[in-house]
Image (tube, rainbow, N blue to C red; front, top):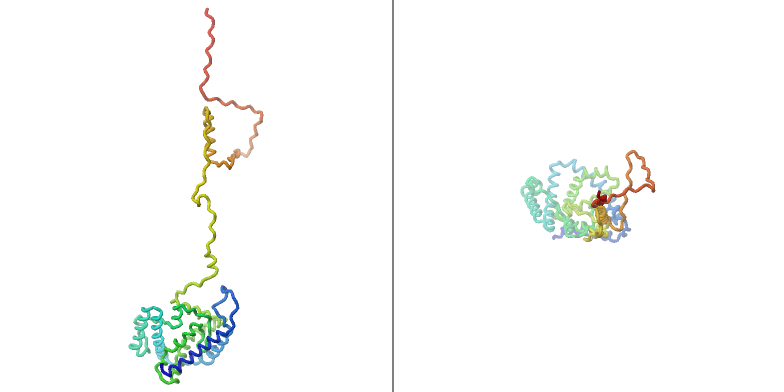
Length: 349
């Protein structure tokens, strides 16, 4: 690394270190309900001050210059400048894709850089997109996220805007690979970087205008959008669901209910039928024995046999009860009919 490169990189490293130290010295946040709170922002007081500084700088410097840039510079020239800076970004993306274990994407981005550098005349044109080599941007902050490094609390960096601890650590490397590597003097590097900043800000004019019209709290909107987008980029657009305490509580298994006979594998024993009465004769005794066996088999001994209610006529008139002194009809006896004795014979004449 040359002396000029060191001069260019050291201020950015120092800025990231100072911001990380300031974040570490900030007052720790109080406990909040994570179901209702937004992203981790324990340094909100510090972040809002830096956000106000960046917003003021953007309002009175960056935005007017970017607006003038879009009005004065022709569109083909602005497109060429954007492609030129994007070609360097694509080369850094290929390196990070290789570090993330994506050799296919790394090869595709390498072919894209070679096509735009050669056929596209140093990256001023973008023939790679017409050849089907789409841009898949990656940076070192995403690489650290793929490696398992947590993003940490949300941070707002002076001049650079929204970030977090992980991206602030990767920022010096992410900003180092830029067209400023092609020039030698410090002022030339500063001039090239300034053109890159103006080009980036010019591309965000429409988004900033929509943000001014729709967002009630611009700080909260920018914070939530940044955290959500960075998480989506780390997981290639398919981030997993965040764990919830409610889901963990619901996943706990409840105690199993006490099983009945059918669940435990045993069947309740049916009461045994009483033996048939011995010495019963006639059809009436046989029918009574069969009826008692059927009733005993269908009804457990612990439950009395329900008595069916008396039937009522359709007209709703209750029949009169029979008197207690009513004669009992004789029950005919079943069996062989008795043979009457022969009549006595008279005396012989």
